[in-house]
Length: 262
Image (cartoon, rainbow, N blue to C red; front, side, top):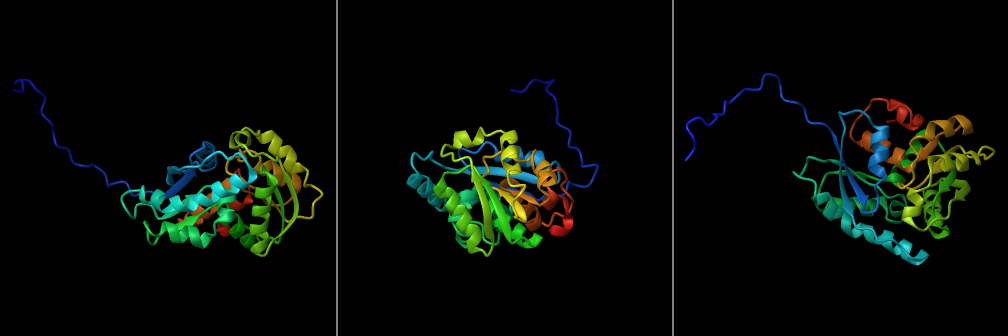
């Protein structure tokens, strides 16, 4: 039996209008990716955009053939990942955060899978964002820096060229281990990126969402004199475009800094 001196609850009214709902970007991350959220939060400091994440299983590959097969299997988890965002309709823009996966699996297939559980939603990815960025910037010739083994380098290069762009130069850290990729320092990325200074490329594309690139984009653009497009940056740019966000995002390359490009 409650004591006689127990507190009573007062019902209060809201003094101000309710807070409007923020646009939400639903991130679909691989289970080994602890870099993407960190990098996106470093780039996007506006609290009016919410980033909400779920994960799909990704096995560490032990051979080149297995590395490609592991990526192909991602498509079977996209629909289930989208279904984890409740209530239905709360998230309308999704981002599948895997560059080589989105080079292997077509945009059409990824969207088709997602819309089984979240009809009417939009989906982007690092590869889709990069290809759209190349087109928006009028770029035809691309230099490419990746952390990948040769088989994955070829997959990304083929995807770029199959969409009408030319890969005119390429460099890679040649790593198969995702742990090793995530350990590559920004200064190593900066130094490798500077090696393209004499290239005739119209942009540099830095592939892979396990690379920490946010702090090097502006420095590389100043050095190379061309746009630098990275996996995280391109995916974020396209997500913001799909969400109708028009504010400049400064400090991470001209792609994000110019609202006119959205």
